[in-house]
Length: 215
Picture 1 (cartoon, helix red, strand yellow):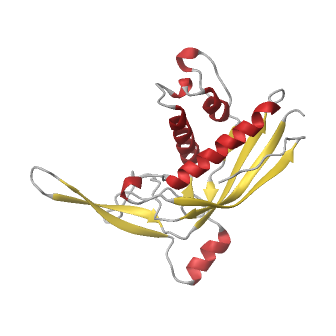
Picture 2: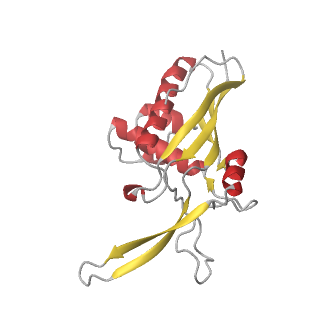
Picture 3: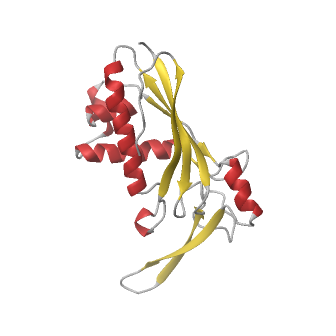
C-alpha cells in the first residue's frame, strides 16, 4: 500500500434550524440582522467546509483535554487536521480535505413544491439586566428538514497505513459528537442540531485499507 484517497460521502440533515452566519456588510434597511452564508452562484444556503472542520477538530480535541493552541493539539488531532507550525516550527498537512456542502437538489425541490421556504427568521431578545430593556435581533436560519450533500476526502499517507483505522475511529467520533452537540451558532438556544445520513466510504485512488464509518 502507498499513497491513496478515501471518500466519505453522505447527507447532512438539518434537525433544528441552522445558523452559520454570512456577511452583514451590505444588509439593506429592514433586512435580518444576521443572515446565513450563501452560495454566490445559486443564492442558496451552504455549510462551509471550514465550519465542519473547525467543529470536528474542536470536539475531538476536547476528548483529549484542553490545549493551549491548535499547534499543540493531541497528536491524533494534528494527524487529521494538520498544524500551521506556530512557535513549534513543525508544519503538518491535514489528512482530511473538506468541501463546502451544497443543498441536496431532490430534498430542496420537495420542500419548494410544498411551498416551504429554505430559511426562516427567528427573533431573539437580549435583556439589559440594569434597565430591563429588550434588544430584539433577527437571526436567519436554514429550516429543519433540509438536506446538504456531504463529502470528505481522507488522504492515506505512504508508510503510515497502520494509522488509518485509528484515524477513521476518530472521524466517526467527531461525527457522533457533532450529532450530540451542534453546528454553527446559537446552539445553546436550540439551533444547529444535525444528523449524518446515508454515509458511504469509497476508495477513489490507490490501494487503500478497508475501513468503515460508524456514527
